[in-house]
Length: 231
View: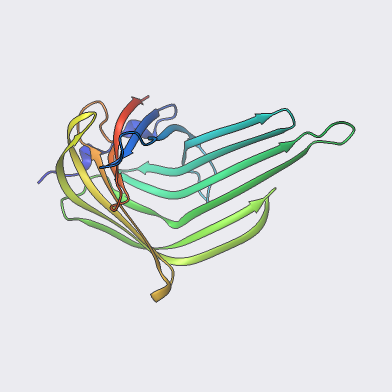
């Protein structure tokens, strides 16, 4: 029975590793705009009371004569003793308005985040059919200039299932992959919100450890271009 160990790459957690890829909806129009994402592994950063590794998964800048706005999206993960830890994610938006003099420039920093406590964790080495399940708290926080605008915390359950190996045909070629599903149930009883995702990660080749297909089971995306530069 083939474990999932080959489908994770320790290099992803090294500072300076970059991943740039495009993906299209499976069965979607060939003229549709592809989904693009660039991920850069950064250093450790304070988040949710811990200091996990920060992954910059999106940076945008709007720079006009009297208006500047930067948006940075990050995910926070770690790899410790053969286990992956998922801490959550954040979006930071910085806005600067420079009116005509003598008025002074104004700046504002808006941060929204969602985190898991304890972090969702699972072993790199899983056997087909194995399920990693745990009870967590799911917290959302919104701040402006360091001031908390609102926060909410609900009980949640995180569940990762390793389904085993699958051969996958992609525009990048054919790969042996590991298929996983992640289910997060947040909130009490009948009011619970359920998030489900399926991913296929490469077990071989130059993109080993990278997601080749996922995430929404109803409209999965499949990788069409990829540039992976491990450190």
